[in-house]
Image 1 (tube, rainbow, N blue to C red):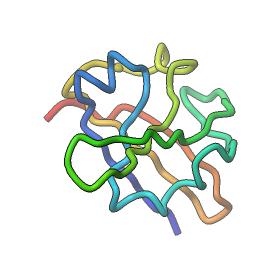
Image 2: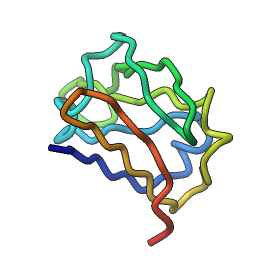
Image 3: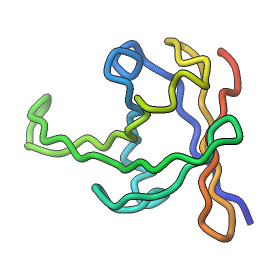
Length: 101
């Protein structure tokens, strides 16, 4: 069984070198600051989810981001590109560029 997270990159994602995790997908990933392995372009990288406190709209809340700065050069990491993160039954994550929409 494979699970999938799909994200269309925003300008902010590209500028920060991270991938915003929608609130509906928080449980798809490990908890914030817990390192895990992700495969990008056939290479394994250690990364984590970072929680950022925010007050953009009340009440105060958090935004979760997947740290991608150390492997983004292996992807077409530009605004509008769609990234797919797959998690297999063994818990291994794979990230690839799907295209533009």
